[in-house]
Amino acid sequence: MRLQVFIGFMVCSAVIIAAGSYMTGAGLGISILRAIAALIILQFVYFLLLVLMSVISPPKPSALKPKNTTQADPAAKTQKP
Image 1 (cartoon, rainbow, N blue to C red):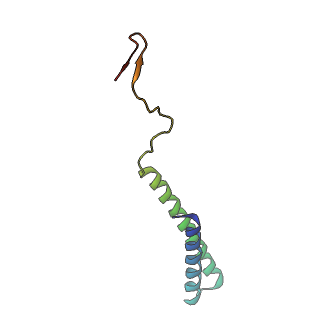
Image 2 (cartoon, rainbow, N blue to C red):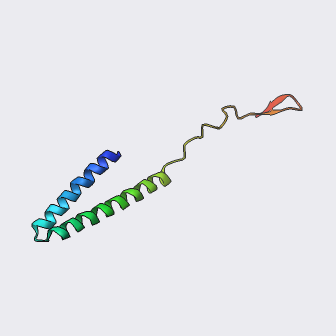
Image 3 (cartoon, helix red, strand yellow):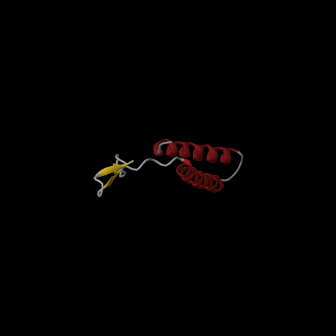
């Protein structure tokens, strides 16, 4: 998920949580605190998912490895397989 999409969903969820909390009779301060708590939880879970995805993903081949894997034998002037 791209960062812009995540931020958009975070803002939408904060507005929905704050509006729902306010409509159920909670004060404005409590509604804002609930929205902030939801944003903190969402950010923490997003970070955990990023770490999990980086741990699970297979390692990428290194660009520094040489393409020719045979070793030269300087004494015999041949290449070892």
